[in-house]
Every structure is written in C-alpha cells, then in structure tokens.
Length: 161
Image 1 (tube, helix red, strand yellow):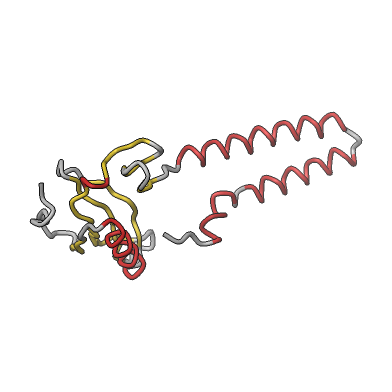
Image 2 (cartoon, rainbow, N blue to C red):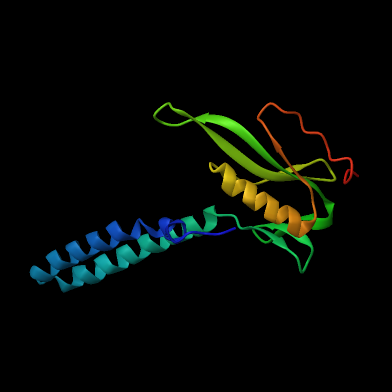
C-alpha cells in the first residue's frame, strides 16, 4: 500500500510549533543574558519532544503479511498463518462527519479458518481500497468480497475449512 509524503510526515507536524516556541523563548533568554535558562529550556523541550515521539511510536501498530515466516503479524506478534486466511472483505458503512454530512467509509479485513475477523484498515476511497484488496488477494491467492453494511457474511465455500 502506497504511503504519501504528507501522510508520512503528519505525525511529526506538531514539532514545528514546539521548535518555534523553543526558539522564541531561547531568544528572549539570550537577550536577557540568562544562559543557564537557555540550557534548562533546551532540556525541557528535549524531554517534551521525546515524550511525543514515544507516544506516536507506541500508538501505531504495524500490520504486515510476513511471507518469510508465513504469518500475518500485528506489532511483530504472529496472529494468523497466511494459509489459514479464508477470505478478504471490504465492508461499506455510512458515517456522519462532524459537520453532520454523511459519507461512506470502507473497512478492509479478513476472516481466518477459526471464523475470527481482523480489520486491516479503514478508508474513505472506494477505488483505493478496492485496488488494495485486489492486489493483496491476488498476491495471497485468497478470494475477496465487497459487502454493504447490513449484508451477512457467508464463508467462501471454496476456501471454507
């Protein structure tokens, strides 16, 4: 799945105000000739930036299909053997935005032979999520189905266990 430049830098966007406030406060201390306070300010902002990095790194769970080990992993933990995946699903559902206008969202996931479901991603673009599910479906040789919110899931009889 393709990651855009803006999508990859967005979690680090809050560093801009953090750096700007550090520069402003350091400049004020420099003019007042309070050099010790500049060092204290630098230490404080370093700890604050480290805290934000820690929060963002821990809040994201990496989801991957590891073809070498043959497992689907979340956060490095092996959850499902790839050969046990019975079907990929895209489920559309209606949501309302903060402005109140409705929109359609899509959930992409899969079921395994224990009939347990896993959600890989949520998306708002039908064409993007359809392209992603087709690509993964072909790569893993697992069928996919596109469902509406109230459709009932029926296991694929070809790959049902």
